[in-house]
Each structure stands twice: as structure tokens, then as C-alpha cells.
Amino acid sequence: MLSRQIARRLYAHTPRRWSHFPAAALSSLNSVTEADLAHFATILPESAILSTLAPNVAPADELAPFNNDWMNKYHGRSTTVLKPRTTQEVSEIVKWCNQRRIGIVPQGGNTGLVGGGVPVKDELIISLANMSKVRTFDDVSGILVADAGCILQSLSDYLVPHNHIVPLDLGAKGSCQIGGNVSTNAGGLRLLRYGSLHGSVLGLEVVLPDGTILDQLTSLRKDNTGYDLKQLFIGAEGTLGIVTGVSILAAPAPQASNNVMLALPKFENVLPLFKETKRQLSEILSAFEFIDRTVYDLAIKHGQGRALDPTEVEGAECFVLVETSGGKREHDEEKLNSLLESLLEADEPLINTGVLATSPAQFSALWAIREGLTEAVSKEGKVYKYDISIPLAKFEEAVNKTKDHLRQKGLLHEGAVKHVVGYGHVGDGNLHLNVVAADYTPEIEAALEPFIYELVASYKGSISAEHGIGLMKTHALQYSKSPTSIEWMKKIKALFDPHGIMNPGKVLP
Image (spheres, helix red, strand yellow):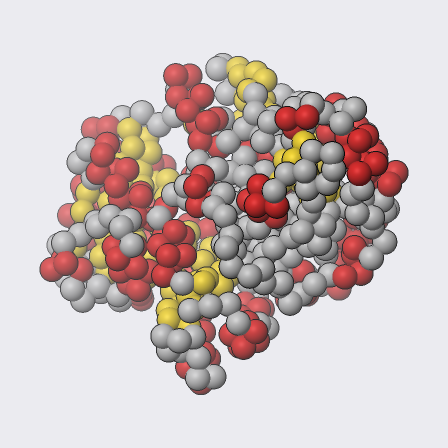
């Protein structure tokens, strides 16, 4: 799991500018001045303002965790971070910025992977961290209403005594915030069971670019009265407004959960294994995660735990983590054991071996391996991350084609690209294709893009399954969206934000 320390570490390296710099989006915007800061001081207490401008000059390194993403890939130069405590304060700040044409970057936990949560230049950062209250929870309906700055893990902990869970689970749950999750339409580890946020979010409170508060914070399961405006903000990455409150349908906590890590002799067995697992486990199947051999070995190397003994992983090309969640332990264990027996006793076994969690500690340890993959590859080097949706049958092919392409370019060696790995959510066709390099270089980037986007387009896939577009993929939106779709996205942006102050340079080309 991404620790708060990793997400907020200081950045000693020379700032590296991403090549896709959207200059036009920021050309008409103004920088924050000392006069603006004086106005913000009439809205917020001194403790909620962090700035390198007079009169209260803060050291630049105090703004570094806000100006830089946790991968040290994207670097902004904002002079000012504001930390409002209420929706009204957000509204007053945004209204002023709209009048003054000051660009705004809404920021949650800053755990994103595509540069969507950090400035492109020197835009004002509005951190939602101080808006962290649970407003209401109805344990009959399961509807939770919370401030956007609530950390996902904190919401999960809040729901434990109420026997409910947040229908979203991410590796960064200890740092990411629910408002950021909604704004990026985060997918996560258990989308297979609970679906996407487009279905579980019931209502939103949003501050629009002119400062107007749009209150759609309904707690109704059914509301068929006109346009469902909240859907526009789910996945908009803060380009249409700032989400300040979320109404979400929490799921009943499973009374029994278990998991098993399986070692497979070849990738070709993943799809028939998925089909058989769905057939036998049916309603209790909650996750089916794919991990290739290289990234599994990196997880062990960098201390994320070990699922199987070294002798048990010999001959394994990849691994699958299966989770079950149900209402009766005996029933669930019987189904899971029956599945494992049938897999191991088959004439042509789909798996070599596996380990079944026998305690809560082992259950957590198996998940820690999967959740720790992001941290493991980051410890190995500088990572180019591609979060793509492609047909399940093409997972391995996409990884191998990328390796071959880099090899042909003479870049697949320790001094350039060290590893090309794949892992992800088989249940929803989401592959995390990670290219681990010794350093970020224009040569490697040029070799990867547009090659990977063209590869995804050839599969009729999506260039962003769950991470969003951010700054990283604005130029590549054309590979997943038609010109007509992009045109109408721009019209929607212009309608909501005619001055272009909201998260400028993100999402749209």
C-alpha cells in the first residue's frame, strides 16, 4: 500500500517537465499575487494558507509535496496552497479566482498516476485535506454522506462498527481521498464485485467554476427527474468543478472473506481459470487479480511479502489472486475448497499449486503482495505507467510486444529499460502495463508513445481504464475517443468553465 510517507516525500531531484505541455490552456490565466493572498486571508485562517509569497513566507520545500506527484514525474511551481474547511470557503475562493482568472488545481491525497492533481505551471492549489468529516450515515439504507477530503481508509474504518464497507478498495487507500476517487472515477481491486463509482455514487456537492454551489447531495436510491448531472463530475478530474461532498451507497460487510494465491504454468491458462472460477464460485467471487512472474519477483525483492515457497513457484509464468466474500464461512470455504480440488485433480491442471489463507493475518498478507506491486516497481526504478483496458486474451501479448519493441530500439537493458511488467484486474479487463527504467528520458518516452496507444487502439481498447487522463494522456485521447466525442467534451468544458480556470491543461487536448 502506498504509504503517506511515500506519497508526501520530498523531491531532491531536478524537476523534470513532461513533454506534453498544454501552454494554450494556461496562456490567459494569471498568477497568484500578494494582493490575492491578502484576500484569501479574509476567507481562511492563517493556518490554512501555505505560500511562498509575503507576508507569511513559507520555505519552498513545504510546498513540494503539493507541487510534485509521488512518482516524481510531474512538477508544478505553485506559490500557494489553500486548505478550506467548508464548502462555503471553497465557493468564495473559487469565485475570486474566476473573477481574477487564476487557474485552480483541486487536490486530494495526490496519489494519482497521470499528473492530474499537480499544477502544470503556478496555478493555485486547493487542498481538500481539511474537509474530512463524515456528515451522515444511515445503517438501514447503507447511505454514507461525507466531505470530499475524507481518506478512503478512514471511511472504511468508520463503517466497520456499522457492518458496512466502502464499495471501493485501492492500494493507496491510506492516503487517497473520496473526492479524488470520485473525480477520477477510481476503479480499484474489487470493481468485479461492487461495480464502478458511476453506479455507487448517489449524489455530489460541487463548487462550480464561478463559485456557485451545486447541491445534488441526494441520498435517494432512485431519482428519475431529468438529467443526472452528477455523472458529469465523476471522472472529470476537477476540470468542471470541485467535488466537496459525496453521497455513496456503502455495501453490507461480508461475513466471511477468504483468498488464495495460485501459480499458473502459462498465461494461456488465465482465461479458462477465470471462467471456471466464475462458474464455481459464482456470487461469492469478489476479486480476480493477475500478476506476471517478473512483477511478483520484484514484490518479493522489495519486501512486499512472499505467498509461496521458492520451490512452489518454479515453472510458474504468472499468478492469480482470487478473493471470495460471502455471508456464511462454511458455505464459502466449501465452494473454494471444491474449486481448488477440481483444479489440482484435473487431467490437464490449469494451476501448478496455490496457497489458501487460513487466518486473517495470512489473508492480509496475500493482499499485501498485490497492493504492494506499485511500491515495488517504484523502488526498482523510474516507472512509465500505462493503465489500459484491452481484451483479456491480449494481456500477455501487450506486455511481450512492448518488450520486443523496446528491444528493437536497443533500450531493453539495465541502463535504460530494466523491466516490462503486467498486472491488473482480470475481472474488468484492466491491465497495468509498467515499464521500469533507470531514469525518465525523452528517448524512452518517444519509444513508448505513441506505440502503446496505437497498440491499445488496435485492440479497440481504452488508453485509461481507471487512472484518468490527467496531464499525461491529453495528447492521446484521440486513441480512445472519436473527434465528435472530443468536440462535445470541449463544449461541455466551455459551458461550465468559460474562463478555463479549473485544472487547466488536464483531460482535454
